[in-house]
Image 1 (cartoon, one colour):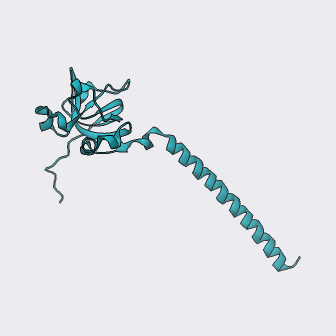
Image 2 (spheres, helix red, strand yellow):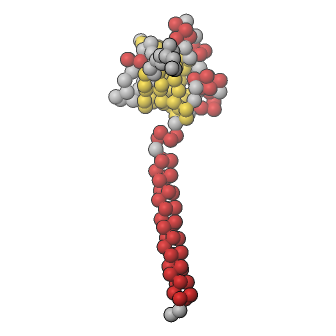
Image 3 (cartoon, one colour):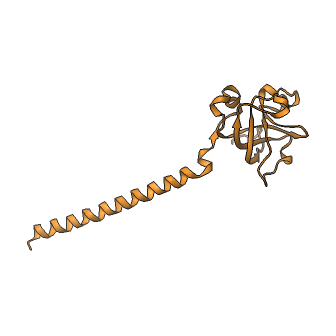
Length: 154
């Protein structure tokens, strides 16, 4: 076999190996995207409380993650835009928050700024319909810590 024929045969073999590696990587990438697409976290929409209040039908029935000032007490569980809205019970600037999933801490959220994840409903049954929507089936909450506003860069 001459040198050209040998080089062509080696080259063809290398092309076959490269094609096989590319197909394997493509299959692996496809399966990873399917796995991630099925994770519940990838379906959660990050949105502000303002967005939920401004366009509740857009988020109706969807899993959302939002934040605000929490009031959690007898016959009132809601997340408000601000502490002032909560102190003055301005329900137009709040959504009702339903019962959390088992194991999700709830009572420690009262009077704190929080992040909450759950299913948004444009119509609320909370406090005789006084709120403009609700977040039900709470799957996760987190207290939002304060930033030191007096901190200065050197």
